[in-house]
Length: 255
Image (cartoon, rainbow, N blue to C red; front, top):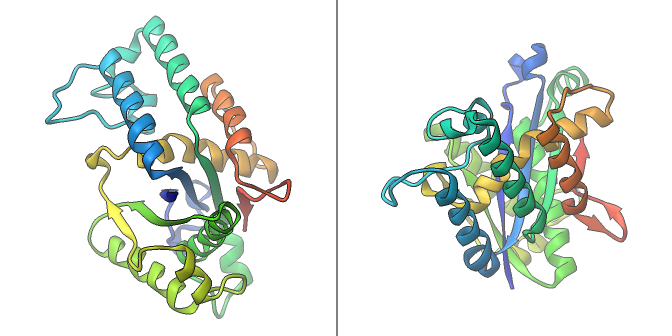
């Protein structure tokens, strides 16, 4: 079997913004799915849910995007109706619970990172990506499989930085995974970068879960969050989806 990890970020890697409480934390969330399962089960069921509640043409598909859905912005205006929103939320949560996928989230405190490493420091995105892909390799090794990596496009120079960071990991390895081990389990020497508009189901799941996964990790660090009822149910689902290794949760990491 071949797996793919779909990556979405919450926050930004800019250390200069780390003193701002709203921009202090960066997290990367990866959703691991088996490619054939994603194509034959997840994608058709996601599209069926969209058609049931929203009007759109196949040439211009609807893309699940958490921020727009929470604010009930176009094309999700029908969710302003409380009954429709309740029914849609229930169906979406059921699918997020039923689908087979594994979650890994890495969150970094940029302010602490900047204060600790005043002379030399990692690029925060690269640091999070390294930890995320180490654990993806552990997952592939554990399941006797291989896989590749796809991230949501941020455009231009940002995409070039993502790809360069990925190449460095394969060329240099990390303290826990050497280059040969990365190359054994990762089938692509290049990071796949695709825009959200491509209607890729794995990237949409990552977008739907990344914010709540980060908030849960921060709550464990004593940073309170006011979670909606929907978000609380999402966190409950995440507990069953986080990657586990030898009985220990490896799907959450705070740096």
